[in-house]
Image 1 (tube, rainbow, N blue to C red):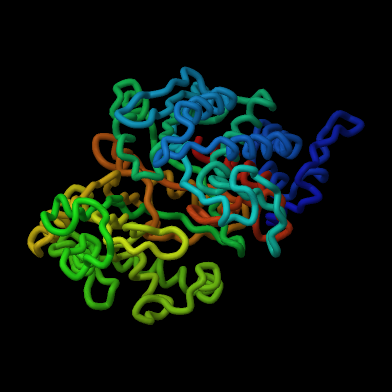
Image 2: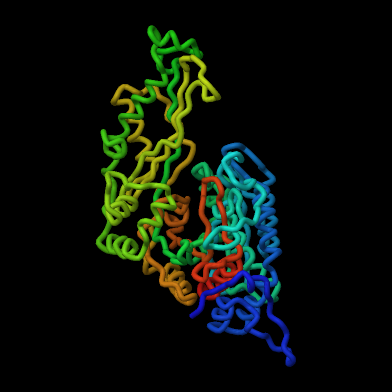
Length: 510
């Protein structure tokens, strides 16, 4: 089965024949193949996609131009209001902002009178950015040629998550354009704090109106750009949990060192809160500078099962180690592990990462001060059966036991890991849908990244959760983030192919 979408076909539409029929030869091959696997309704929906290409792209660019950044309190309430309007445009009804103790969520229903109801998770916020680090303006959504891939849309949020989310909305709009019912009912829940650890998303889910609808759902999924640069796809069976926090050392709290920045010459007679923080940080890892050393951290770590280890070995055998190293800009895995062992560690190990260190003067040149305050931004990744609450308590106890009880531990967000049964109907449907497009997906134990899926997979909902979507993008949280629009690579789908994949998934879920 061909899975090619060429850039020359991306904007073509069905044309009317002399007898009023549809000429399948004028649409992308992947759309044609999918249409042949279903009924006339699906063919009619898929036929609308190429002609909506320009509008779908512009919607993405417009959305990129309005960044909601929780850490900076940027574009609130504009961001959630914009998300709500996008949902209405796609056919959701009863769309409303759900207030929380932080940024509001967005809730809406798409009721087609179908037998199956699915939950849809969205995030409308994006990560911070530094414009000077980008080769293209981060809010412009400029089209940029990328060698070996084609034309990409470059901007903050392009792949995480506005590109895939916009493609799913585009699929719903194709149903509207074709005047066809979406084959499943959909409950939309969106948040605006995912990039700071989703500290209040649980309040959206616990809202009685939202919870009542979610209890009707057969599972929850999140759109993604699931293809790598070689066209391969994987299906994650969960995700690591995360804690985001700051460790703060101050002269005031410590009772030593200055209560304000003083001249650095006084280092000879005055303690340094910055060195105090560095010494505290050094206790968090072993002498290798990598292995977590927080007492009791590994107590609840659940080992990989033989089935999970098999998934990793199969993935390693089919995935280029050198390509991955090049993409990451690394020449060695930690401890000089081989490819397979590095992947085993990625999937099975909790981590303690320093995101940033801030103290004193950081501008051009030097400034001879002894800072009174130092901050370390930390994230900790959690694996089953760890919990965020237990891990945070162990971190605090560890610091106190080693003489660092004065250091403030300020958790800004976080949540538990998630796990979904590979035999669940949702995961099996995702696998079958990828295969319809000629892709043999690889099962993966869990994403090393995190999302707040615990609110769905834990009681009382206990839903299967998954990510799905053809298409490609990279650079989440980094400069030059992009989402593929017009693909010149026959193995990888652009915008239209991504939209088509979501149409196919919706029919499969029904």
